[in-house]
Length: 321
Image 1 (cartoon, one colour):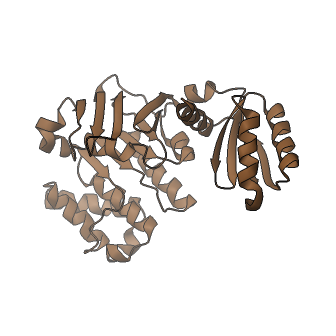
Image 2: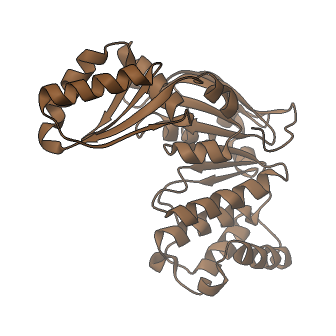
Image 3: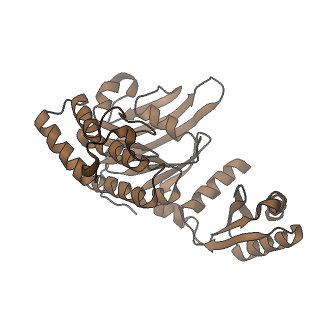
């Protein structure tokens, strides 16, 4: 569902992007996409999929091995300083820990040459809006993970940005703080801000993004609007299960053989998710394998199709291929 009326103006264009750190393994392979002004574009993938490398290229921190990138009509290799003046970047584990919360905002205002009067006005507005007034004198080093994340996002608003890059900004936050942070971002999107948002949290992508690209092993596997992606999987259901650890290995090996290509199985330790066209048959297979192997099923549930189903299916197909 589109949350804003996006313009037709392309603010990010990526074509044939590839990157390797050692000349052997590729962190990105043939990546291409466009982002429109006022859009929330999500990069969805597990850790190590290539999301952070892509963000570093888009924010001028590293140069790609191959391919072309334009940001707001400019090339990062030539116009890095100009681009950096018009973007905000929230990376993982990055803060001015040596100063206070208020000091973080002041430093950012000075770095971006915001006049003092305007700097103070914006600082006070952001402290209030992000619920940071009570801890304004607290040193950033002493903040909780959630408080530090709010500071990192809020201070990017100290200067006028056209594009905000958020690299897994909610890592370490509890459910309430995650939702509050995403709501803060959505409010600015309504005013025309463009956001590129990386996450491995499917619920967040579903809540915030207009379009999503599923990325794995440096490749974009599928890309579309959130609604279109979920519509592709209507009729399919995801079966979630957890098996007692003592019998998990044998159970899942046997289940993978039994299911074959009938369903996509994604396993994490004792738990797994199975995306199936025929959930009744898959449930019967799961119960049959449990009986055959003597495994104890601790949790079994069938849920409606979600963005997680798209992710499971896309990554499973790539791994099989």
